[in-house]
Image 1 (cartoon, rainbow, N blue to C red):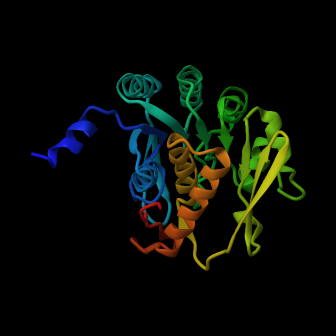
Image 2: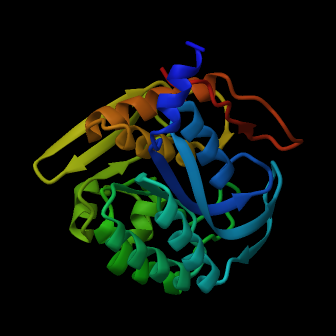
Length: 269
C-alpha cells in the first residue's frame, strides 16, 4: 500500500493551471493547440477559452469563425470557478466583442497576464479587425503584466506604418507593466529580444536558425505564462521560455505540405 501514499497526497492538492485565451488552429501548429502543448512541457495544467475557430493548414488560414461573446464569457466564468488559475496567456481575440469580454475578465481575476497581440497570421491573414485595435490598446493592454509584440505588431500598436527606428520603450506608455519586443523580423543574427520595464531594459540574444516555423510567438508567450504561474520572476520566466523555444525550433518537423515547420514540444527542464 506504500506506493499509494504519494498519489493520495497529490489527490488532495489542486494543481496550478494556466489559462490560454486564443483561437483554435486546426493545423495544430499555433493558437490553443500550441499553448496547451507548451503548458504540458512546463509541467502545469492547461485550460483554454477559445475565441475563434480557424480553418487552417500548414500553408495558410482559409477561414475564421469568431466564437460568440456570450459563449466566450461563459467559458471564462466556468473555468475561473473551478480551476486555480496561476496565469493567463492571451493570443488571438478576433473581434472587438472578445476584447471587451476578456478585458473585463482579467481585470477581475488578478493573475499575471501575458498578452501576445496577434494581429496577423504567419501567412499574412488579418486576425483582429482594425476597429478592435483601439479597444485592445485602451482596455486590454493596461491589464497586461507583459506585452509581447513582434516589430510589425509594435508599429501597429503605436500607429506607425513602418518599423524603422521604432523605440520599444514607447510601448510602455500603453500601460502594460513590461514589454518584450521580439526581434525576429530584423533579419539579423543573433536575434535580439528586448525586455522593457519602467526603469530598465534587458536583452535576450539567441542564434537565428535556418528555418521558418509556425507558432513561435504562441510558444514563447505560453512558456512565459507557465513559468510565471510556477512562481518565477519575469526575468527568469522570459529566459526559461526563450530556452524552451530554441529547443522546440531545433526539434521542429514538417507535418503538412507547407514550407513552415511545426514546433516540437520538448519537456522543459
